[in-house]
Length: 316
Length: 295
Image (cartoon, rainbow over all chains, first blue to last red):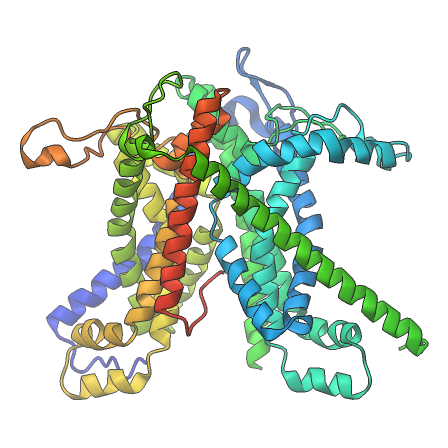
C-alpha cells in the first residue's frame, strides 16, 4: 500500500487531501476523548460534593439534594444480567438451528429477517413492552412465577412483592428481546465460519449433530462467540429507551425482580429535564453518565482486546 | 470421552434439536408479535391528519405529527451532511493512506469504542458542548449528536469496503500519472460505489430511529420552526430552535396518560419502523454480495 500511494510524486493537492483525511480520522479520537473529558468536567460539582460515597449511597432526593448512584448502578447491572441470561443461550441455540438444522432456504429467510430486526429502533421495543408485555406480565407471568417459585427458600425472594408488571424482570426481558437478533446474527456468522471438513470428519466418526457442535464447532468458534457476548452486553448495559418504559423508575434496591428500579440510562433520560435548572442535580446525573461511560469503556476495551487476540490467533 | 449408549446419545441429540427448534419458533414469534402490534395499532391510528397536522393538545382530533416528521427529516439530513463526509474521509485515511500506520490502530480502536458508547451519553456530551454554550436546545445540536453516532460507523464501513477494491486498480491509475486524490475519488470510489451507498444508508437507518440522544439536544417543539423572515427561507427549517422530531414525540406521547396520544405514538412508531426497514432493505438490495458491519 505505502508503495502504491508513493511519496515520489506527491504534489500539493495530494498533500492537502491527505491532510484532510488525517484530520477527519484524528477527529474521531478527539471526539471520543472529549466525551470522557466533558462528562468528567461537568460532573465535578457532584464529585466534589459527594466523593466516592456517591457510588454506594442509595439515597435519592432531589428536594433535599441527597444523591447516590447505588440504585442506578444496581438496576443497570441486574437488568443487563437478566437480559444476558435469557438472550445468550437463546441466541446460541437459534444460531445452531440456523446453521445446522434448518433448510438452507429457511436459514436464509430467517437470517435476513433477524438482520432487519436488529435495525428496529429501541423505542419500539420499549413501547411494545409497556403496552403489550407489561399487562401480560402483571396478570399471567408474574403471578405464575410467584406461585411456582415463591416458596423456595432464598431463590423465592426474587419473586416476592406485588406483581406490577413493571419492574426489573420486564426490563430484562425487553432488553433480551432487543439484543437477541444481534447475538444470534453474530453467533451464526461465527458458526458459519467453521470449515465443513471439520464437521464432516466428526459426522464420519458417527458423532451426532450435538456432539459435533459441542466438540468441534464450539471450541473452534468459542472466541468469536465470547466476543459476540461482550458486544451484546455493551449494547444492553447502555440501552435507554427499551428500559425507561418498563423499569418503573424508582430509586430503590430490592432483591425482588418484580420491584421497580431504575438504570443509569433511564435515570438520565427521565430526570435530566427536571435537573436543568439545578446545578447539583444536573451534575449528579452527568456523573451517573460518567459511571456508565467508564463501565462501557471497560467492557469495550475487554471486547476489543479479545477480538484483537482472536484475529492474531486466526492469522497464525 | 466417556462411552454412552447410542440410544442415550441419540436422545440427547433429539432433545437439543427440539430445544433449538422450539427456541427459534419462540424467538421468531416474539419478534413477529412486536412487528404485528406496531403494524396493526399504527395503521389503525394513522390518518390524513397524522401526516398533515402538527402536534397539539390531546383533546383535539385534528392533530398529527407533521412537525415531527419534517423535523426528523431535517435533523437526519443535517446529521448525514456532517457525519458522512467526515466518516468517508476518515475511512479513506484508514484504508488508503495509513493502513499500517500506528495512528490508524488508535483511530480504529477509538472508533470501535465510540460505536459502543451508549447513545444517551452522546446526547449529554452534545448538551455540554453545544446546547449550553451555543444555541440552547436546537435542531443543530440534535443533528450533531446523530452525526457523532454515524461517524465511526461510516468510517469503519468505508475502510472495510475500500479494502475490497483490488490494488491493481490503484496501481494502474497511478501508473497513468493520476495523483492519489484523483485515483481515490474517481477510481476506488467508483469501484466501491454500491458498497459505500449501502454503508451510508444503513448508517442513516441506524440513527434515524434514535431517541435518547435527541431528548436534551433537539428537545421538542409543538410548532413547525420555519424561518420567519419571508422570502425563500420561509420554507426552510430554522434549526437553531428546539426542533420537533418523531422519536421524542413518540416517547412523550407513549408516556402520557391520554388514549389519543398513545394511539398517535403507535402511528409514529409504524412510520419510523417502516421507514427504517425500507431503507435497510433498499441498502441490502444495492449490495447483496457483502456483509454488513456489526462490530
